[in-house]
Image (cartoon, rainbow, N blue to C red; front, side, top):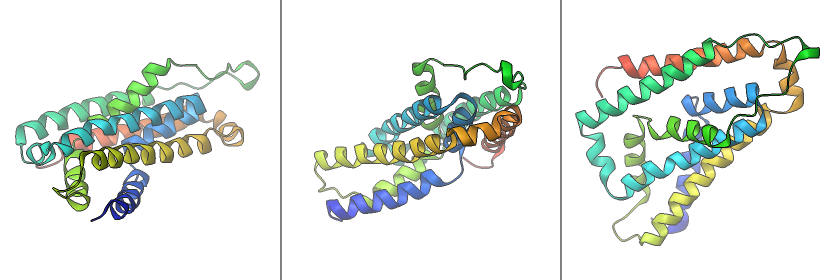
Length: 208
């Protein structure tokens, strides 16, 4: 597969994977609706940066080893489940906002903390080794130069950031946020329930 075919394949496959409902999507939606555009975009940035972990070990051939190691998959499974359950419980504990006339501006959370949340959510995904093993097997060849591998990795991160930043911008529009202002705590709880569900599903899933 030549470079341009690889770029096209990565773009299509990775966009479909990013658009599928999952912890990353829920996290960006939650932060955008509850804390505004800045929070959602910074989480999107963290998610994109989290891809670097998977890209590096996949390019080194470690994805195959990780995907076949019950020990590493078990560690990844419990780490991911614990983090998602933690985020879910935080969402479930959300409380109603003050009346509209007394409602403060969205909490301006530390940028590093938001980026770290997105990074962690993506980096500890226990399904990532299998996904990246499949994707890299599909688009890579032993003859592919290192510079092309780097370009593909950076492009995947840009595609990921572009998708989730778009989600954050759409969900943080004033009209959308006004509609959710009165029920914001229910939105937070619902998304927290989804996050908790993802965590429990990983925790009790059979096999790896």
